[in-house]
Length: 156
Image (cartoon, rainbow, N blue to C red; front, side, top):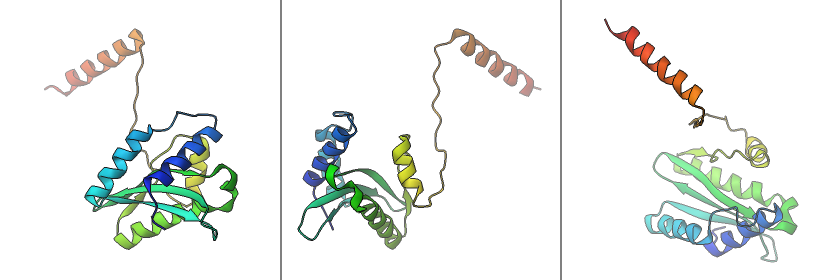
């Protein structure tokens, strides 16, 4: 069902505390600003899973444009993680993307446990960027020489 940013923030806080990474997630103010912008532009939704008693199990935010729906962030109640609610919420986000006719992007997490979770949905991993940085002077010189050599070989 549709949820609120308060639902999402509360469950995300629990998720990072469980992972002993309190404060590692996006700042609450940022999550609230993103949610407000998404709502103002009609560009996404927060979905939640509740049980029959109304207890909140999981929440996720999905953002979309005319071509793609992205899973942006989510969280689950620490005590209720085994309920399958995170999978249900993700599936509903995927289903909504299908109804809209958009592609679905799982957000490309580099965290091993998150990657394992999203791979279970059968998506195809796609490399989208590679960022490299090295403080090595030797490496930078070798790259610079290689570039100069390629340019020189291209000239008539």
